[in-house]
Amino acid sequence: MTTSRLGADLQNLTLPDGQQAKSAGAPTAELLAAQRASKAPSVTATTAMAPTSPVMRAVAPAAGRLLSIEPLRRFAVRRMAKVKMKDTPRPRRHSWGHAVVTWPDGTRREGWLRADDGMHYTASVAAAVASGLARGEGRPGAYTPGALFGAGLAERAGGQFLLPDTARPAPGGTVLG
Image 1 (tube, one colour):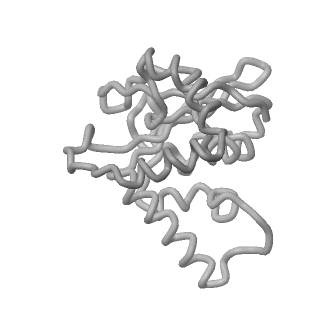
Image 2 (image 1 turned 60 degrees about the horizontal axis):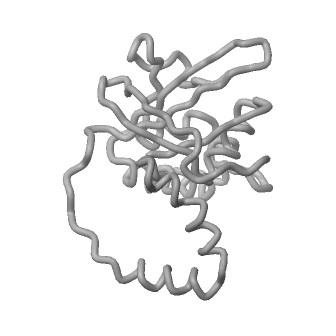
C-alpha cells in the first residue's frame, strides 16, 4: 500500500445510464477489498464523495496536514457535528460502484455495480452480513464482506452487476477476474 493525495486520480465518468459523474482518490475500505478480490498489483480507489473541484483538490493536502494536529481536528469535528444538513433531491436515480482492473499483460476488465440509494444499499449489505453470520454462514477470521460471502452478497443486498458494453447483468454476477 502506498499513500496518495486526497482528490488525486480525478475521474470523469460516463455511467452506464448515460449520466456523468466525477470521482477522485480518497481512503476507503473499497481499496483493500478491490486489491484482495482482483489480486491486482496496483489498485486505485476513487469516490464521488472526495473533492473534485480544482480549488478543493489543491487545498485538501494542506487541510489534511492541519487536521493531523489533534486540537485542530477536535475543533473541526465539533464544528462539523453542529452542521445542519438540508434535504436535497437525489443527484441521480441510481448509485454506482465502478471497478477497472488492468493486469501486467495489458488485459483490462471494467464493471459496474448499480444500486438504488447508496445509503440504503450500504445498510442492506450490513444487514445481509449480520443475517448470514447469525445463521452461522461465516467462518472465523477477519474478512471484507465480499471475501466472506462472495459477490452474491452485493446482489442479495439489492445491487446488480453490469458490463458497460451491454448494460445488462454480468453472467455469474462478477466483474473481476
